[in-house]
Length: 289
Image (cartoon, rainbow, N blue to C red; front, side, top):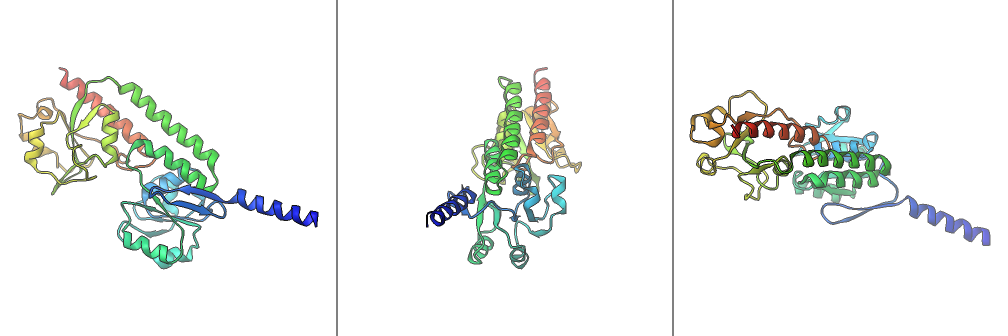
């Protein structure tokens, strides 16, 4: 009898140790009987973060436009930001489905929940959120050691940039996302946080939306020191150069920036932030002439 009781106690203790509980970005406590070794990711930034957490080998399904890291491109695609393949996801028998809280349609996510699939909501809007997400995913997948190492490395990279550009002259920046309609970044976009770290002030930080539409007149009124746009050579920034009275124009600071990961709220954003900081520093020297 004593041996039986001891065996039962050992079994209970082992099961308890194997279970994992993590609070997601919707404030929900998610408990799994064991670390997740079959994971479906429904956003490119989520996939990138899972790989950084050491859980890349466990990602069995992902979304369209997943380019980072390169290894993730071989994972089967099961949806995108507008539609997901429910049958394909169910067939993959995931231990957890990680969704982008503000990016995946709620109706689609609700269908997953109704099918009884465990869902984890992820939402990364500031640079400080990235390392925290890596650690949470490491906890979910049982890859805590790798996650901690990569999260700490990301934080150290940010701190190096922060210390390098702290105290530099602040520049007013208009960041153009799209030209027709004219769209920029609000304070909910992670690029807004990156600008701040690099010594830039987003001229539309007072807008709550991540990607608000604005008027040309509103941009002219805020007279930015720098106008930035994506690296595409499509000429979409050229019309600004006709407004000679703008500080950005007079200093030659209407610039395209080649930083494809800058809008990706995940560990791969770091090279993009580095490029942004260097670009603003070069613009800074022109405003000081």
